Structure formats: C-alpha cells, structure tokens
Image (cartoon, rainbow, N blue to C red; front, side, top):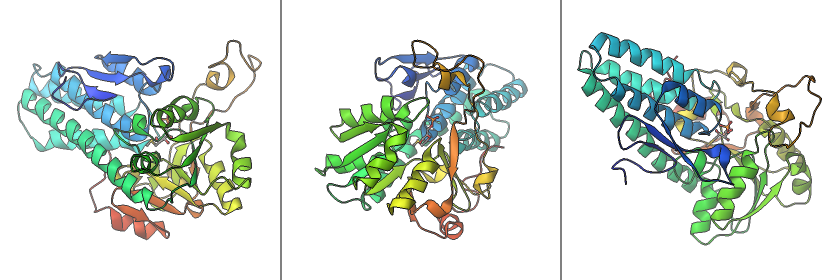
Length: 359
Ligand code: MRU
C-alpha cells in the first residue's frame, strides 16, 4: 500500500510514475495502468482513460511531479526548462476542463516560488503540491455533497448526464456526491442516468457507480430525458461541469444544455455542481470557453461491431456544450450554493488570485 493517497488516480510507489484505473474498459474490466513517459500520460488523458474535470487535474499534478522526480539529476537550468515544456505539453492534452491548467498552474507557481532551489527539492515540493490537490479534492467533494443534499428530499427523482461521480473526482464526486452521501444516510433516490452519447460515460460509469452503491438507477438513452420529465419522475437535474465562466455559463458534457432546456420547459430545477477550481473568472462568458472537438469515429464506429454510418459521411463531434446561466437554478460548490446573479455570487465566492490557471 502506497504511503500516498490510493484510489483510481495515484502516484506510483516509485514516485516516478502515475497509476490510473483505465476508465475506457469499464464496466467490463478493472485494469490499472502505470504511466511513465510524457506521451503515455498525454495519451491517457486524451483517450479518456482518466477523465472528469477534477480527476484530470489530479492526474496532471501527479504526472508533472513524477516527471520532475525522473529528471531531478539534471542541471538546474535544464531541469526548469524541462518542467516548463512538460507542463505545457500536459496542459495542451484537453482544452475545455479548466482543472487541468489550474492544477498545473499551482505546481508551476510552487516551483517558481522556490527560486534557485535544487531540482531534487523542487521535485519533492511538486509532489507535495500534487498530493495536496488530491487531498483537497476529497474534502471538496464531501462539502459539495453536503450542500447538494440540502436540495433533495427523501424519495426524489434526479436526472443526471455524463459522469460526475467518484471516478471523475477522488471520492463521492460532484453531481453524484449528494446521491451517494444521502444513500449512506438511509435516504432513497430514483436516479435517471442519460447514457451520454457518443462515449457512454452515463451508461458505462454513472450506472456502474450508482448500481454498485445500491442506488436505484435507471439508464435511459439521451433522447428519453423529455419523456421521463413529462412523466413527472424527475424532481431535479444534477450535472457536473468542466469550466464555469464568470457570468455562470457552464461547460459540461455535450447534451447537458439540452437537458437544461428541457428542465426549464417542465419547471424542474437544474443544478450544476463543481469545485471552485472549475470556476474560471478569467473567462467572461460561455462564448470564451474552448470546446474540444473529437474524432468522428467515436460517433460512427466506436462500440459497434460494424460501422453505423457511411464511411465518408461528415460528422460533427463536439465533446462539450455550454449551458446558459439563465437555465441554471444554482451552482453548488464546496463553499456553498451560488444563486443568480452569478456575476456577483461567483465573484464573492472566490478571493482574487486564488484560482488563476496556467495560460
Ligand atoms: O469527456 P469527459 O468524460 O472528461 O467529460 C466529463 C464531464 O463532462 C463531467 O460532467 C465533468 O467533467 C464533471 S466531473 C466532476
């Protein structure tokens, strides 16, 4: 057992590697991978072997710390140049979730503050910072779960999209946190999990996590959200987020904004849950959030024995969309629940300079 935090993302016992649970294989296979080379780390993040905004941040922190430890014998100038290069490489792996640059920015500032310290000392400090990010995420998820639970009553029906559970974070999760915490306390919920095309995080991961935890979960295709709402089965929608702009516009998995539009139509409250590290006050509105575009084959052939579309057909495959702040009933963070107007409530939550990502 490692002396460091265990779980589905952790630093290897040799301190020069990162161990992750390969989420692409779930729910069929539980397999851990050891990442050592920068290209393995970038590939793991880009292929969604590790995914979910907070988990990507935790992983990137451990990756940079492990790479620094590998290079601690370099002359100081070369060591610092390498750190800079590797941080930029990790940062470029996925563009939308701000937690990635937030975590790398934290490590970068820690190294910078050490001035001319020896590479071995800097590597040790980066390890400490990465572990702190992980430990803080455990506490943040717990606090988000407590705040989110105040929005639910025993017996409620909740619809969720994508996966914002323990696999996407460290423990409890964000959107799934209140459901898991409430269940631990003897409450009962009926959860509707959108399968979340094209990569099926809802079917493969959310249904898996909730089912394992003994939560009453019903899997639906994304285009069934309207009928379950119309049937009166949904009391609230809980979703995670990858980046929240200063005005409250929130980027999350593609399809989230459609759920919010439906919820408004049926008069159902729509909540976004995420740590303050996902709030980017440097990003004025959702229009300023870069949306990741992914390989069309994810739509056409992934998960199918044979292609399900003509080989040459055009495909548009954005991985995220932005939910307009006017559709959001509340943004639940570890520091409390923000309500409109978000320009004021989000700014009041975050002290200046607390959250400046690496740019
Ligand atoms: O592409 P993914 O699987 O990384 O997308 C994940 C999501 O959209 C989650 O809802 C979000 O990161 C919040 S995780 C607590």
